[in-house]
Image (cartoon, rainbow, N blue to C red; front, side, top):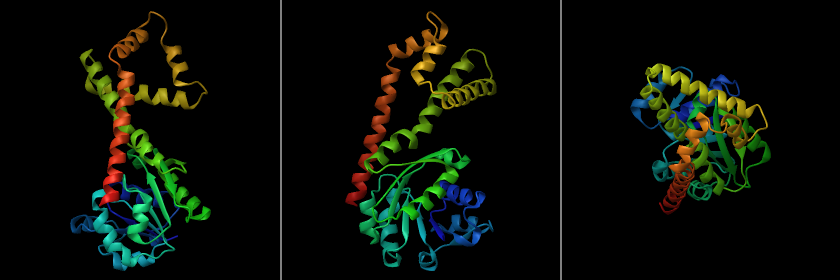
Length: 271
């Protein structure tokens, strides 16, 4: 399979490096299309990649086209690509909010896969939720999933609306985790730890809690009960969280992210 990644930004290059590192794709079968002259020049200095500045020289060579550009750039991109797309090519989009029917109608193709990755994909610990149109064959879908899995784990959903939900949970989720970590680090510093000490305490605590959760059958609620003994320090902290409605605030925040993802999709449909 010959792959063209359109967009040499963070996620585009995350995919490029992951594909090569996993040996699921070699240099001869991987192309990068980058419209920014400055960024294109930077990429050409890395001999791992075949970099193109114009779509005419590479679109027809690709079996899989990955759209890794900002959603606001999609109208211009669609206009440029439509005359060049072959209906047998598979298009994988990681553009937030841009729906499959919008992509299909604007590119004149029916083989579309839409995915929502997240930033930990950069270190092979990503979470990607994806879906596809009916025209994508099972073989094509498995091949794309194998590519996605080079960046972490993946989950297929049949309902495209769940991509917006995934955007709110796993797409934006790392920022929620870092937000909570930042608060704990600040609390640690206020208690007398140096910044590096507080960061180590918090990072290892998160890492250990997640590892423990994944290696057992206990729910989060069950683990909380194991740590929070009656009248103890953990219970005191959890009681304070309950008083400030932190639990509900997290749910409210995730739903705000969902609404924004849905609004972005509507805006893209109307553009």
